[in-house]
Image (cartoon, rainbow, N blue to C red):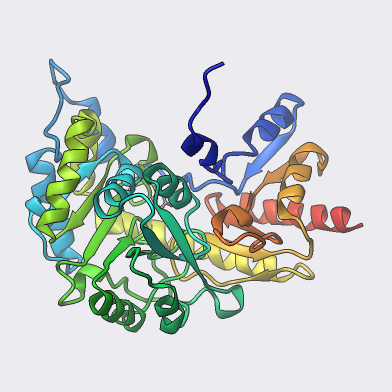
Length: 396
Ligand SMILES: Cc1ncc(COP(=O)(O)O)c(C=O)c1O
């Protein structure tokens, strides 16, 4: 039999999706599963975006431009200006989700065997994109005890080698919910300037910041023009995960020129979805205020309820819609699988994401899970109660 590639064998499975077969089997056996495992919001997509596609009269569903439609990119530049990020449409390449932007960025800035430093735990698919590009992820540990704050800058400096090309952060963070302060970002800015590295910020959760704290973007920081690259997406912002529209943004002309070649190879981003994303830019502030208020209530409820379970430690998220919880068990993956295979409370159970896959360092996060608070409050409270009863039964 012909053999598959070593790179393919090295590709990590998504910790978010790898338990899906167990969930499907449980559903077939009639169990109800409350999903706390995946960042698919239950929030309604803005009507204006749905209508733009519904009411469209296109005759030929043609390719769009490689870098994305001109009108969409121009309006996107306006969106960024409102967020105090001053870019032109030429600084933006529209991609098929933030996912494609991440792979274009890795391909554009790093060669095989180059290294990218990422605070862990991090969005697990960074491992997949890095493996695909042959790039090595070098993790720097952030800890639940510190609420996952930026690790001391010396920790980054210790890891920088001639192979290092970039520092990649997710702000606000998936899976931690951590929101980097302006001061923390300025420390990172100093270090990338000193060592001539890129600073890549995945800001797909930009709108979701809580407790009155504003998001500060790396592209608001003066002097980072040649270093800063933003990865962005409409998936979470407008609850439009299925549109598959994202973008990369940078003032660095060489990066744009290089990323364009990757973009040309895949021809163009999806046409209908760009129409939806362009219309979504008209979404009112009232929509975001409502969505944010909803997430804050969910977060508060989740953190309070988890805090009541003996032995559970949780970091308080300041943004996005995830948290990491440490459980009084040794093997969260075994627990997550057991929840799906063996545990039922009135024929219901919960699905969670074991956190080890969000770390690059072996052995870390093994007693942690990631919870996405993408269920409305009553279901969320119910889900945490199931988790509590399950833990009692699992520990015995
Ligand atoms: C931090 C982060 N970055 C990027 C993505 C990719 O999103 P998409 O490809 O849907 O834009 C996700 C999706 O969950 C994410 O959480």
